[in-house]
Image (cartoon, rainbow, N blue to C red; front, side, top):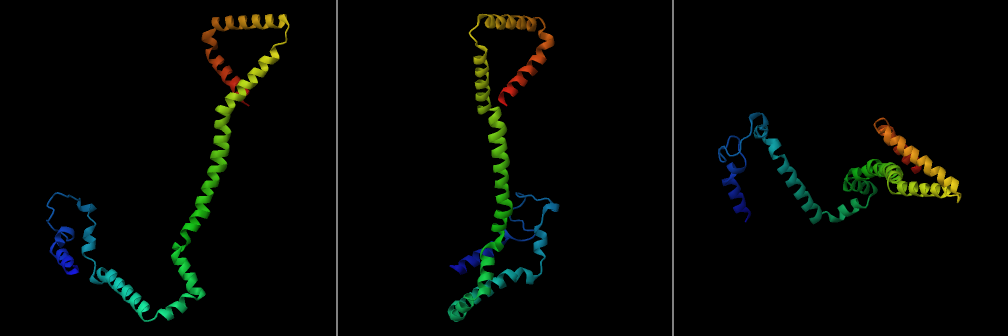
Length: 192
């Protein structure tokens, strides 16, 4: 099966590799300044064969270690320096631990203390649901305090409100902006 695979790869090599091959014709056009495969074509033979040499060396050393030197390899595996090297290489040079401790945990702390505590639980909640509820409660408490049971208090509030509304209607063009500002300030003060 491997011979068939090698022979098919050899016969169809122009389909995959080859500088200046015209197999695809002009169906795939690459600008000359973007064509980086030309550098790969002219690498010396040693660098082209280096991955193959390292793979063969690794496979043969693994075969000899597990076939003939397993006891010796097991004694080496039990030493402290081998465990340290093994842990260092197996745990990806501790990049995950460094990333989690210095970048990941700091970003989680920042998002909790700033985003959640100050924005979500702070500003947004004060301007949103809790702020509206507290301003309604404050307004209701103030209205309850206005109800004294005396008719002259109610009459004074009625007359004052009437004159205030007439004054606003007559001068609406001048006070339109100032009324909006006053309403905003009153709502903001009630929320605090």
